[in-house]
Image (cartoon, rainbow over all chains, first blue to last red; front, side):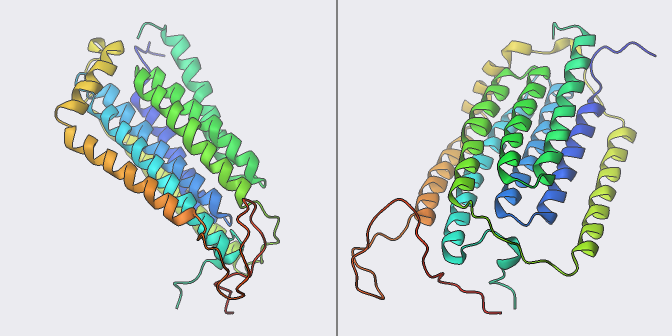
Length: 107
Length: 199
């Protein structure tokens, strides 16, 4: 086995790919609306791991990926706040968090 | 990075195992409360990965924003909408599961193939800036990323106002339909749903 100088970037990329796919699976299969929001957060974290890995391995002088990660964290916080507020008002009107019953836009 | 490579590999293995198993727990566990707490663990482990990548500022921001704000918000939402309900069974749930799982596995294999076969043009890891990264992020935020930085502050203000407008109850002294005075208590009471299910 060759001696490594640092962790290969592929390891980070594989972890983030797996996390992203788990997030998509949860997004497609959850019945509870809160769990759907949690899956979206998982996907955003996977994207952040990708950005951070590339910023550290490819662009480690001008770390622009880290600045992007900061912005993604900002947008994720705003998204969580608005999403949970929508969820609360939806729960108040329909008295359920089942994703199958949110079919107002279905014709 | 001054940590020895063996320590780095051990830390990376533990953190990625915690991330993947925790994420599987988040999407698979029956109880939503366990999922929320596991999500906090996943966020902490992602912050650990950022520390391994020499990014202390982003790791601190991850812990503060995700664990401190988003996860607490999710737990509050679970507390507010926590009602034991029997979900209606879906008749074609099995085919849905099969299709979505196969889509996810296909995407995963595609992504891993790209990760492993592409030749990344990496710069040498010797000139890592390490602890200087916080200073560099500050320089970026106040020079070439100044406009996105200001737009982000407007976005946060909009999200705050939007969340308040969406989540508050309409404060009225009288009920519209019955004319009785409304008691303004914090506890949600059972009321007639406005948008009842038509089918």
